[in-house]
Amino acid sequence: MSLLRPGVFNRIGTQMLVLVLVSLIVIHAIVVIGIYLSYRFEGARVFDEGPGEIVALARLTADAPRGPERDAVLAQIARTFPNTSLTQATAMPPEGREPHLGFLKDHLGQGFQVAAVPGGGAPRIAIRLPDGDVLTARLPPLPGPPPLAGPITFTVLFVIVSMTLLLLWAARALRTPLSGFASAAESFSLDGDIAALPERGPEEIRAVARAFNRMRDRIRKLVDDRTRMLAAMGHDLRTPITRLRLRSEFIADEELRAQVLRDLDQMRAMTDGVLSFLRDGQEREAATTIDLASLLQTVCDQYADMGHAVSYAGPDHATIMALPSDLQRAVANLVDNAVRHAQNTVVRLTRDDVAVTIAVEDDGPGIPDARKEAMLEAFVRGDDARTMDERSGFGLGLSIARAVAEAHGGTLTLHDNLPRGLIARLTLPGM
Image (cartoon, rainbow, N blue to C red; front, side, top):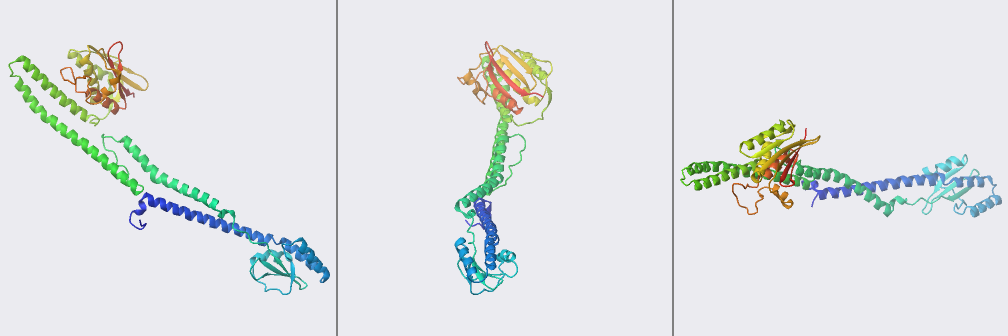
């Protein structure tokens, strides 16, 4: 794969390769600069400060008279300082401009001359004494490469620099987009318009973002198409149901006419229930301040007018922010579910500092604990025989109520009403 191809640098593999190469370059630069500075410092120390003993020995030799006495001094120096190799020479090499001899020139004083002895091997210098004699001496060896260039140090530096660059790159190129994916997935909803996930980062991350945005659009389109299709079917079914209801009025057999009308009522209720379930979760109104106590009293009065024993218990007023029609439909579903199976129903309202609770209590047969959670799912009915009559529903009332509760940031749970019956508890955030 060529790095010169368009878009290749945007790939994760290429970026990681570049980071490794940059790490190697940075490490080599650190090692080279460290070696240079260390070698230069150590070299300056060797060439400037190390020959201090040569200055003292040269002066000591110059103070000794020529002849046997100077020879004796040189012999004694050779025995005492064998590494210096201070000996007499016959000629003085030409004086150069070696900067490392500055220490000797400055400290030997007037009358002395210093020059480097040409040739390989250990570095040597020549010193002309004031009386004309020439001495040669060996300088300390140059320092070797510092420990910084060792393989262990190089490996440690490589790991540190590489991991630092990779972590910085991962934090910028991977962590932020992945956090965006998680946030977008958690906040995905069919309500309203949600901004598309930004397509940034390496090519692979951008491809995932594009796929996520396309998937979200397809899901939204699928749900919208399903809702429109079923809404159209429900609308179209109302007309033949109405015609059948009108024609059934001419059936002479009263029992047959009652059965047909009951079946038609169930068909209409099924159509309305499915459409209500499909619309649920799609806000059609804005949240507003409502008197929850008045809303509950209205629902109870409506069922009482139809001959059901439904009563309200709670404060006269309780103000919250809610979607009025959705909340009324949820409570009506809970009450309708209760009056189907119970003789008496109580809608109880309580509130505290953080929440308000609507409890629909009945004295019916209740629901076993093992089925309470399942009953909150769509199209799940308590009738194990799966038959439908005037007392059965379509398994949508509780699921719609739970969806409305969750849309308000609340919950719907089912509990036993001792000694007999069921409590549907809808909890909503308070103001």
